[in-house]
Amino acid sequence: MTGVEFNHDGACYEQKAKDVIVSAFVVETPRLLLNSACSRYPDGLAQRI
Ligand SMILES: Cc1cc2nc3c(=O)[nH]c(=O)nc-3n(C[C@H](O)[C@H](O)[C@H](O)COP(=O)(O)OP(=O)(O)OC[C@H]3O[C@@H](n4cnc5c(N)ncnc54)[C@H](O)[C@@H]3O)c2cc1C
Image (cartoon, rainbow, N blue to C red; front, side, top):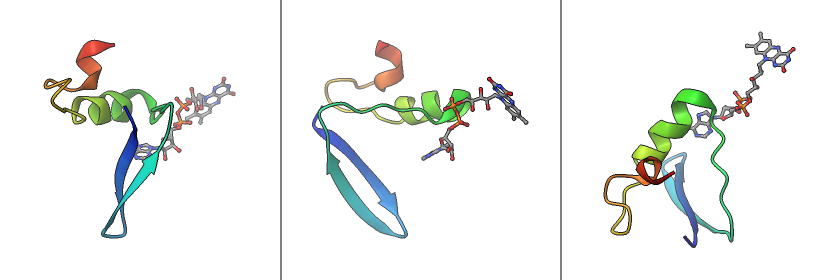
């Protein structure tokens, strides 16, 4: 992991980070993680923790 990409007001931003903590409460946290699929985690990050 190198950081996060996010959209705000129609623009896409990238924030590099050594560690990323997702703390968007009980429903939104797994939803965000499940939507964070990539080549290393094709089923989304929430399936690996
Ligand atoms: C009325 C009420 C009273 C309470 N009183 C107490 C109390 O006295 N003592 C106690 O210990 N607990 C109390 N609680 C419970 C406590 O508030 C929660 O357990 C605690 O806030 C959970 O913290 P959290 O960081 O997991 O979530 P939150 O504090 O809900 O923080 C989640 C954050 O993620 C953000 N977010 C959500 N979705 C996204 C997204 N897609 N992208 C970006 N950001 C997002 C939200 O805007 C929010 O700022 C109370 C709760 C309520 C509703």
